[in-house]
Image (cartoon, rainbow, N blue to C red):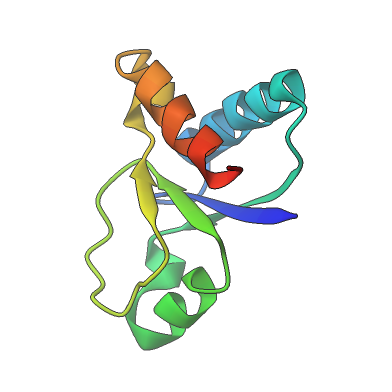
Length: 97
């Protein structure tokens, strides 16, 4: 099972919306994944990168500036704005290929 971490600045509003949209998409496509959420504040530095690197993918509302992060990061702002949403879903779908 794939593990996806959804993050935003505070780990509250934006990430909750993205989690809801992502889970709906995964259910619709019959894809199974563990979806967790976190704040960028909690994921700073080497300890944060170590946590992120246990996931198959990160869906983030903003760029993650941490050179220790090796996990692919998908900018998920399209899920919040509706602009570029299909591209975000395409990237998510590619995880399962």
